[in-house]
Picture 1 (cartoon, one colour):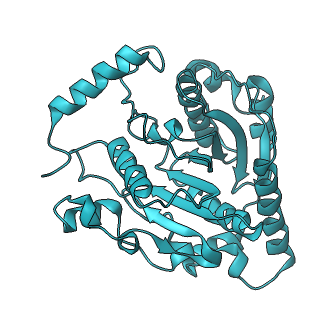
Picture 2: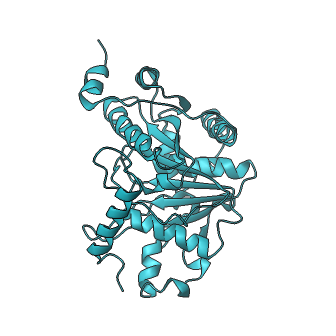
Length: 307
C-alpha cells in the first residue's frame, strides 16, 4: 500500500494538531506520533537557505562529534538525498527507496538496507521524499525515525543530526524540530540568507510553543565577513556560534566527495577543522538557547544593508 495516498489521514492529523494546540497563528502543521521520541541522544536540526552549505556543515559537524568520541547518526531530509555523500562516498538508497522495494512492509527491512557507515564511523541515513506533488516530507521523516526505533538504532547513539531541506518551513519539513533539542541555522553574510534565516527563526519559535526544541544559534558560512549577520543577531537576540569562511578548499571537498577532515593538511583547513571541533564542544556543553524575536518581512527588508 502506498503511504502517500490517504488525504483523509492528513485531515485527521491536522485536526489532531489543532486539538493539541497550534504551533503559531494559522498553523496547520502536522504533529508526529508522540511515541516517536528519539530517546537519550542529543538531537540537532540544521536549517538554512537552499544552497548555503547545510549538508557540508552537517557532515563536517558529524565528523567533529565523532572525533570527540561520540556515536553519531546523520539523517538527510532532502529528496535529493545528497546530505551524506561526502561521508559515504556515494548516494545511498533512501528510506523511501527501500520501503518501496518491499511494498512498504517495513518489517522485512534489515538495518543494512537503509543505514550506511561513513567516515570515522558516522552512521548515515537518507530519508528521501515522496514523488513531487504526492505527499508530505514530514511524514517521511516520521517513518524514518520509526524505522530507527524499531531497529533499536537510537539506543546506542549519542548525537543525531537532521540535515533539512532548504529554507522550506512548511509543516512537513519543520517536523525534525519536533525531535530536536536545538535548531541551528546556517547563513551567509548576505541579504537572501539572512532574510531566510529570519523566517526560519520564526518557525523554530512557533514550534517551541509545543515542543522542547530551542534555537541554538547561527553558523556563518561561505562568507569572508560576518558584519551583517552579527548586526542582525544583535537586533533580534541571536548568537553566532561559528564562522566558516568562503574557501575553495571547502568547495573542493564536495568535488572530492570527502569531508574536510580527510583532506591534506593546510593552515586554512586546520583552522576550519578547529572551528568545527570547537562548535561540537560548544554544543555538547550546557550553553543556554537563544531567545530571539524575528522581524516582520518589511522590517527586515528595511533593516538589512548599508546606509
